[in-house]
Image 1 (cartoon, rainbow, N blue to C red):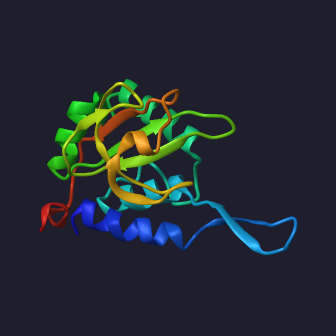
Image 2 (cartoon, rainbow, N blue to C red):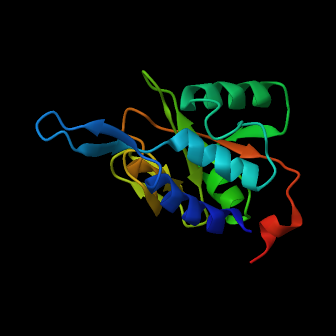
Length: 167
């Protein structure tokens, strides 16, 4: 299955795996977020990339550390700018967008689309699928990363299974 089609399904899955907290007044469960790290691990595993672990193995900051290490050691990943990230996603490649944060960062998936200007960031941003506090498919990265949290981008060079390019 193509990664973008899988990602669309996985965003829906992410909405079904929420982080809940009890409302102090009513005692009802309230969804406060969903898990970006689970989503990215699922997407990576879908195309045969095991570098980002199992869905509950690493938090976003740990994934970013792993991506940096893999790039530094030339182990199948390369860091890219927003234009390269969008181009690679348009060719059905695995592209992770991420930014460190405290207590944890955030990661999302760059998907096929058209890079566009983000007023919030003052620069062009690629299109992503996102699982986190806001779950969506097909918006600019600026919808998931605030202006003080500009994402970095990493492209996995494969190998990809034949079905990764299937329509």
